[in-house]
Amino acid sequence: MIEFAHFNFNVLDLEKSIAFYKEAIGLEVVREKEASDGSYKIVFLGDGRTAFRLELTWMRDQKEPYNLGDEEFHLAFQTDELDKYHEHHKKMGCICFENPSMGVYFINDPDGYWIEIVPVR
Image (cartoon, rainbow, N blue to C red; front, side, top):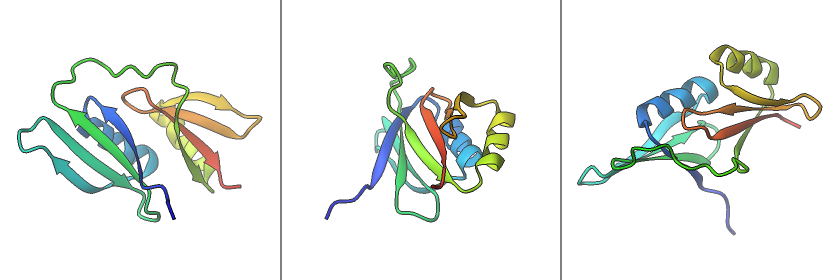
């Protein structure tokens, strides 16, 4: 059997990204790994309920924003409190796209990655 383990985003400012995911989604740091020479640091975030992890990778030598292409890929989170989160994300100013007919919306993280927020169906 194979199951999902984690998904990776490369980030420019690790602390800013950790703070964003904690405030916006409620994710907490569950594990960290750092290169002995300081060239990279990896932080795994979790929701405290599932085994899925979001891996944030910081590379010391990366100075320019990552090329996200056409932003056709995204990570999705589901919630049974969609209205509550929508209001919270609206106050944070991070909503980048809404599709009311589908009942979903997207937020941007500090590096421009799109995160879809969907209702539990």
